[in-house]
Image (tube, rainbow, N blue to C red; front, side):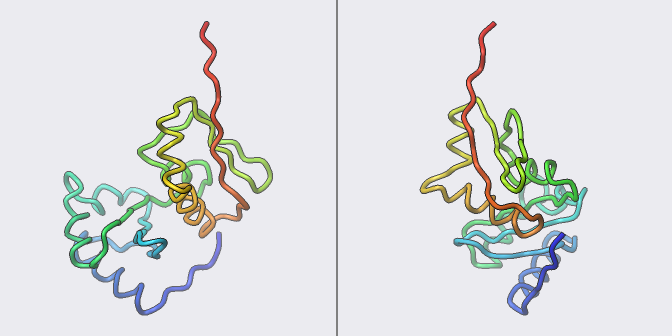
Length: 146
C-alpha cells in the first residue's frame, strides 16, 4: 500500500468529518469537485449516518456539492467493489496492472463510465491512491440465453 501525505487543508476536513460522524476517517482528498473520504472497514454505516443523514450536513459544513464515503479494504477486488458501490459488475479481472470491470448491463456500464468518462477516472484515481494499477477499464459482455 502506498504512503499518503496529508496537508493542513485536508486535516481540517478530516476534523469536521469526525465531529459530524463521530468516527476518524482513514483519508480524505479532492478530485474534480468531489470530496472523497476513506473510512476503515466496518465504519461506513456510522460514517454516512442513518438514511445517509450525515452527507448533507457534511456537504454544508465543508461547502462542497459532492461527497463520497468509501469503505477501505486491504484486498484489491473488494476495495474496487466498495469504490463502485452501489453498482455491481459480473466480474473483475486483473491483467498485470490493468483492471477490467465486466458487466452485461448497459445501464451499469453507463454509471461506471459517467459523462465524459468522469466517473471512471475518479474511480481509477481512488484505486491508484492505494494500489499500484495502471488503468481501469469497463467492458460490455454478452449474456448467453440458454
